[in-house]
Image 1 (cartoon, rainbow, N blue to C red):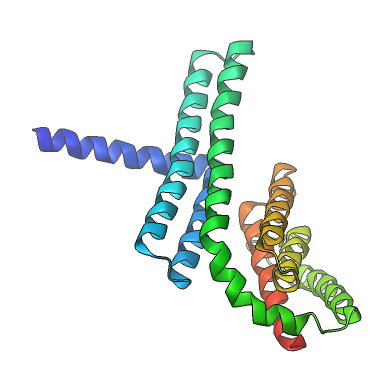
Image 2 (image 1 turned 135 degrees about the vertical axis):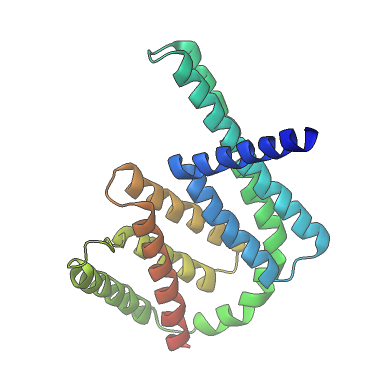
Length: 230
């Protein structure tokens, strides 16, 4: 009997997680970023302690988002009218998510700084010798490819159009990563690119899939472009 209760509790918890992923756009973004960061952690061979800290940080952000979703659902259940206290409760819950996200960025910066700083040093010194006009040409080529790509897939209703602004933003992230000597600048460019992606979704101009497609295209184009320049 006790085992059944534990099993049911586990099933209910999983249902809650699935619900949050299906209904909350921010939760889907958190999971996508978490998957990317954890994959990077294994690629750069973080130590056991570093991986433990990374897992804890990622879990903290997701847990805060789950609590935020629960608080919003509870308030919506109690009242469907505007109330100052309801606004405060929702804002404070969102603030908790923001604090945990800022903490995650700080932890990621500390964990990955040495790994990427050493990895990109030799690439940076080679790329910085490339003339600036070649970079400008890359941007022009990228914009042209976005137009061509959107025109090509516009005939396929199920695919959707990639976000052009997100594509350019993440291509610049790659450029900052390769050209700068400071990982902090790269983290700032990633934050800006994510804000641009979020803005495209908030304005209902693009779906999450379309924004992710744009980000992938931008990153791939940036990497391939710099490899060609080298």
